Amino acid sequence: MFQRILIANRGEIALRVLRACRALGVEAVAVYSEADKDASYVELADEAVCIGPAPAAQSYLDVNRVISAAEITEADAIHPGYGFLAENAKFAEVVQACGFTFIGPPPSVIAGMGDKNSARATARAAGVPITPGSDGLVPDMVTARRVAEEIGYPVMVKATAGGGGRGMRRVMTADDLQGAFDAARSEANAAFGNPDVYLERLVQGPRHVEVQVLADSQGHCIHLGERECSVQRRHQKLVEESPSPALSDELREQMGTAAVALCREAGYVNAGTVEFLVDDQRRFYFMELNARVQVEHPVTEMVTGVDIVQEQIRVAAGEPLSLTQDQVELQGASIECRINAEDPQHNFRPSCGTIGRMLHPTGPGIRFDTHAFGGWKVSPYYDSMVGKLIVHAENRPEAIKRMLLALDECVIRGISTTVDFHKEILNDPRFRSGDYDTSFIETMEETSS
Image (cartoon, rainbow, N blue to C red; front, side, top):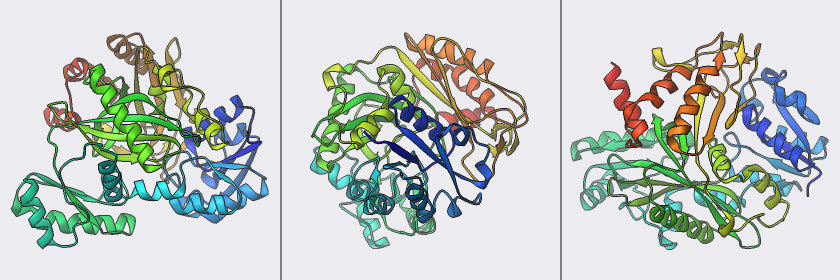
């Protein structure tokens, strides 16, 4: 096992990794920008290093500064968390070249699965269902028109690089293709430095369901069930739950088996998430593989009892997984609400400033993963998430009830948050019935306006 791990991230995930290190008896090194000097994880770490000013490009995204911090603190390994450098293959290569262990998949796998066109080819080779689409990249409009006619409208133009909904355009008719194609390429080039796109048939009214996987270097690969992630706004997830109310036991097993097959084909090691779209006929299609720990990993931890971050660290240290597929059991139901510093009444405008009074929800089956506290300054430089509120109960109706009680106890003064908006979501009859898809929030906003 490692002696010392540097956490190359900030916020609640830095604190989450720090706790996993403590549980394993490993020292944790925090890095922080000048804006985060008073952060809770900085105070709790065994050692902390300032790596630059507030802008992420000059601190958390600066590979040289992160590596220098690992060198001067004599760390053995680097955990990237999620976001920032977590899925940067070049960073993973540099980490290894400098003599540290990267707590994540091999750089070649990050690169291969980070390119969506390459990932589709891997899924196809593994026998995993993919949506009908282009055989590869679509270089020009002539090819785009031909492919679109072959697979049938509506279609999606998608950037092969990046994520977060950028470089994606929905095309309902042939008349819309030119504008969508040009816009997707332009946005992808600006966001990721890569204008390449591909086409696939649009799955209308889909559910977004992802499968958590774990794989070690000894050849063992398992899945920990699925998470329902269809409650999202502009491709950004707001509420996640496990298990999905849409899946039968048979479909759950099929999707889990497909996720493991994909990871074996890709040579995957460590924790990862295979994302699928599920249509109204309960057919599933591969979407992408996230080569890192996910924001929503706690819901899986709650229903399985598996500490995913500790498994990441053990696997990176060369140890085998601590459990087999037969030992994975899903117990009860879990829901996570992302509490963001945003104002839903004003188009989810970011709400920066100093938090006044802050009360953390507590009680049986309630978990609040947050780095924030009363007096903490929410910075305009980073993601708006203040924390993640997670509950677990014996079944879904009880989990919904427990989440509403926890949201009532979640008091954050001084800034606007999404707490009340989450109450609206959980009280919506469609959410309560489990009969919803990725258009849920869009429809909710249209109804309210």
